[in-house]
Length: 134
Figure 1 (cartoon, rainbow, N blue to C red):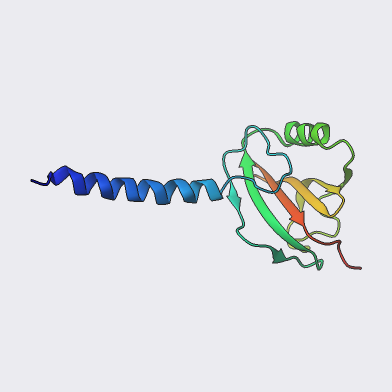
Figure 2 (spheres, helix red, strand yellow):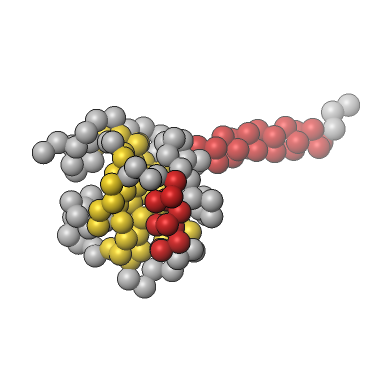
């Protein structure tokens, strides 16, 4: 005799496998450092073209930690990175004024910023295949 719970357990196991594979896709797989207090983010599944001509895969996370603390953590982990204002040659255009920095290592970009009145610090990591054009 088949147990009525067997189909429920099989269905639950099926959905757990789907959910766990979906959650795994959200881990930062760029190879660049993930901030330890990142609240969990979204990882692109494919490379995309940026307005500057680069082709990058992107991770977006955030943290309630202060902007200065996140900037200091990334600067320590990426000592060879060139630091610039996040608004310079912004990927977001001139629509937003952000407070933060952009770290550049080779072709890769790490944006760390807060918008006015934002309660979290945003972290965007771009692992790029090619250099910016122009």
